[in-house]
Each structure stands twice: as C-alpha cells, then as structure tokens.
Image 1 (cartoon, one colour):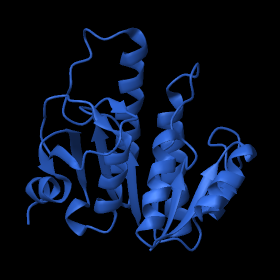
Image 2 (image 1 turned 90 degrees about the horizontal axis):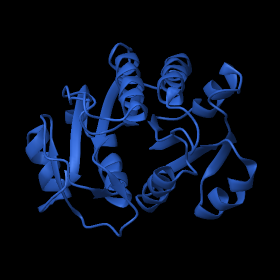
Image 3 (image 1 turned 45 degrees about the vertical axis):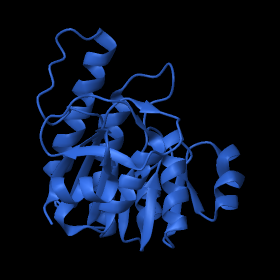
Length: 217
C-alpha cells in the first residue's frame, strides 16, 4: 500500500512512518519544515513540503496523488492554537476526495466522539476538543472510507504492545505514541474499521486481540 502521512515528521507521525515502512508499505511523508527532509529520506520515505495553513490546495492534492490511503497525524505546535486540527482536517479531506484517495485515517483524541464532558477543562482544552469534534464532522460527512483513532494521553515510552480498544467510552489511561502508531498501521487495511471511531488507551490486551474485540472478528 502507498500511504501519505500528513505531519510525517511529528512525534507520532514519525513513528507511523517508521512502522509503515517496516511493514513494507510505501510512504509519502508531508513536512512543513524542510529541515526534516533528510530525516524522512533516511527512514525511506518520499517527502512533500506541505503547510496545512499556507500551502496551495493543489499542493496538498499533489502529495496524495497516486496513493492508496491518507493518515492525518498533524497537529498544532507548541504555542499555536488548535484550529489546525479543524482546518487541516478539512483541507486534507477535500484534497483526498479530489485526488481520488478513498481511505482516510485520522489520529484525534480520546472522547472526541463519545461525548466526553469538557466542563471542568481549561479554556485551552475546551477549544482543543471543540476543534477535534469539528474536524470529526468534516471526516464523517465526507465520501471517504474513514477511521478515527482517538487515543488517551500520549507518552514517548517504548511500545507495550498491549492496549484497551473500544467503540464506546473507556477509562483514560496513558498510551505510548508507538502503540498508537501500531494501531494506525493495523486499522489502515482493515475494512472492519471503516466508518468507526476507535477509543484507544493503555491496557493489558494484545493490540490485535483488542482491535478484534472492538471491531468484531
């Protein structure tokens, strides 16, 4: 499979790129800073310079042309607002549709689709979830074969290989970015995951078994 990873040089995006390549997929990694190009090339990925805020729409479409799937792993940088989660998603959804790419997997945040209450959250986190939920509406209202992966708090720990996965609300237990990346790679070619928002957290069940339980064997 040939996959475009949006935000390929980010902390989670890079792990997704690495795991896709390890699984023998071809990867096109989009980056917005050319300083990351050498790193992506060293991993074995093709690169495309894409700034979701500033790039021309056709630049995003070009990054997806000829690929089988898109993974959205981008996010706002430190000090930036969360609007990129909404606007970046909208632009990439529309670009995928124009490029003729049907499969779209997005990394979001736990509870974004399950009605998680934001009442006690900071204003920053309330806005974050507002943008994530708006982004999800763009995805679910599209013509794409979409899946949304909604992980709990992310860590940079080594992969545990064990998670909790569900289509319903689950307890929020931190999960490593590496385990999230593994889940993204696993659902990418899984037809059972199409049209599903998957809650993902740390757990005690092997990843494949947890996804089988959530999606049905």
